[in-house]
Image (cartoon, one colour):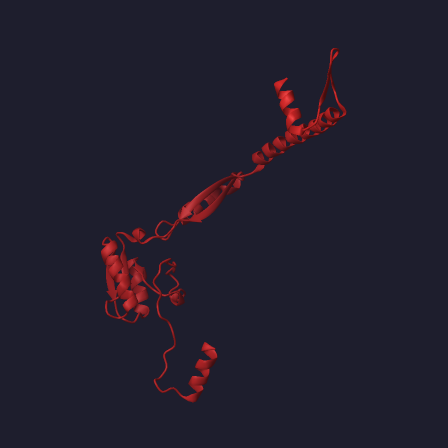
Length: 203
């Protein structure tokens, strides 16, 4: 009775007509009863459909990958058997790359004195990440340096523009606050044609 009274108070309508002979539904009660039956059927259908969808949906397996912990070996193995397990879906997600991941690795970078920015990067690595071994390279990278990096299986600090120089090396972007000045090199007293070209480029 308390639940019925609470429902009537919540709806703001009288659902039952009470008399000495018993309780009967009012017109509003008949309407609520009819709509409630429809809602209950819809709710049961919702649960049934959700359970059927869950039974059809693949199990989602997230595989982490990073620069020094790639998932290629696992994915190659999975490619051999995945057709036998269609209920599984594999999603590759990246690990956040940090300098700590280079601990114990050799990092090739331009020797100190060539660039203020590179010296700042070196200072941070030497101070905050002494487990990273820095190997000096010449001020100007040439193909020999890239070959050396590939042969020694180490890491090298490069620019995004050099991503496709060596086919055996992969470039991984680093999310940090350092920026490298980049521009065109031209004579101190350029010709009119060069000046015009510079105006076009910078305009």
